[in-house]
Image 1 (tube, each protein chain N blue to C red):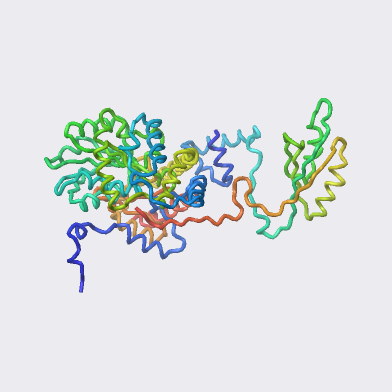
Image 2: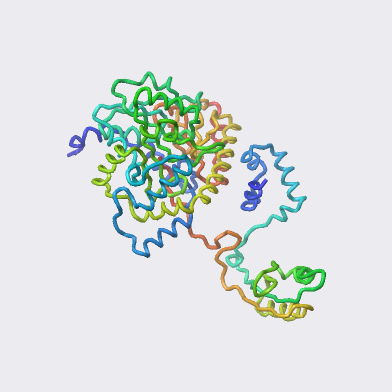
Length: 159
Length: 390
């Protein structure tokens, strides 16, 4: 049920009764469907998209480009796994182009992240090169504009 | 000294819009949830806004051809060919206007002589009667019935026919009821129009907002293209209300006559809005469809909400309105709307603003977020419980 997923992706706090009305199904049917989607790992987790900067958290985020030598049998997967198991690593993608893995890392400070890259990532066997880019300011994340000033400018009542 | 008696008779004879009062009350409240808004809550899709900005940067600031930019007329012709297999000549049969509102005014003025009558199914949009009167015509309201889901039939129209009847003005999907007309319903109306040789003005501004089915374009019915003045625009489907851009399609005589009025009164639609409209037709459809899907979910939510409250309502199939019957509360439409906004800070519009046959109903717009619709439904439920023994 693609439409149900689209609604949940945008607002995971929507109530089962609202969903039941919107999809003209019973609450039981909606609950069962969501359970199934969770069981089949189509829905992976429910989170909130938070503007940490506004909250006052000064974390540092870096995007790391990694080149590596693929290994026999497992290709890039084994090294990717060694990387994504770290808590500090938020995102890992296998890429086409000039580098192989794109890794997004969060840390407390610039030094913290640099240290992690130098001591934990670069030292992994098979990694030949890393390039770190630190994020200065987020404008849009996962389809949401971070500081959206657009608001409802309509008249309260109109024909 | 009052200058009132110096005003024209036609202006004096039209009543100010019944919506104003609720606007004034609502505007003073902070936490008001408005179900009273007749326009999308979405902002125009960015690609359309961006193309307009680009046009301004390149210096598109001049008049355009009276009929509208040739590129826009070509896109409109192309759209109707693709969607409804209708062939309109983009040089002679298409006029770009300042919203459907202007197109409506032009269409009526182009065909009405003093005393000519226009059949107007009610409830309907507020401007139909006013435009008719300002043109010297006589609006003849034909009440549509809730038993029939506010669709209109030839049997209902027939008794209102006179030798002076010249035009049938229909607006489906309908504001304020959310009613649509299916193909079979329209075919009967088409027969009726042909039998009595009526011009049909069809306001299809909500056409793209049709749920559980496709919109039937009146002009696309057999033999109807020639006698129909088809009005549509970008306001509702593309969330472009403030741009003021619409169009009229019809035979070259009708469109030529309308263009004559348009060139002396309006000259042309704003060029920036025309640039946006071109982009809407070229690349806007996917954004439009996303908005329509969202309206559809809200529609089901609000319909379910009223059903559970026990307020009688048929399932609306078009536009973004639901038109519940509130007579069971013992209030009139105006009382209901006024007490609800005072007690619960929910704004909606009494059905009587859209004609006498709206009596006992209120119009609720679901062009607002799911969260707000849910909260408004809770407040209305609370209001009903408190006033149960009214």
